[in-house]
Image (cartoon, rainbow, N blue to C red; front, side, top):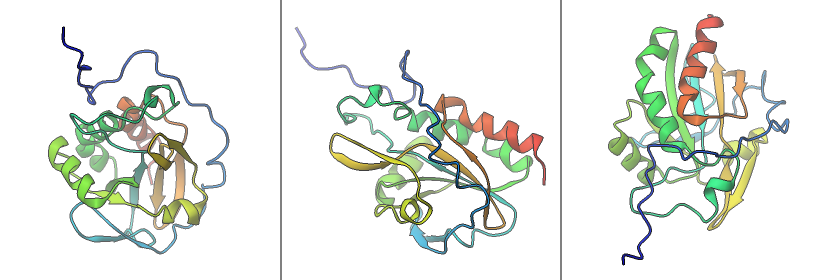
Length: 195
């Protein structure tokens, strides 16, 4: 009898995941200017969050992306909003061109994982955008963004998405559920709120 656990499929979501509640932790963000800070991205470049460029940018923050053959933290699926980072990335991948056609100039994923780790994710999931690495939670500290802890990870980003327009946070999606259709939710909002 094989005692090995079956490998987790990070491209699908298990049923009955707990739904995150809106605790008001992002209510203060709309209208705030993005801080000037340079963070590394998965392509090896620095991204200045305070100078993303004209027009609208999407930055979706997520806790961590799983990797095939590597276990997620113990109890991960029981933490509301934790599971689903790969499915969220794939939804942004699949709707990237639609977002561009709707007026989005840039899309970034962002977590506290290293830029090298994220580079592997970008390649494996064939993402048409880069991921920003914030290993020291500089943006979280500057904007008072919510975070949480899990086994082996004392601090992780809570999943949320910023719509940044000309350097100012125009809109925030929080909480996000389910993550595997979140890009479609962003796309619908963008289409209903043209610049």
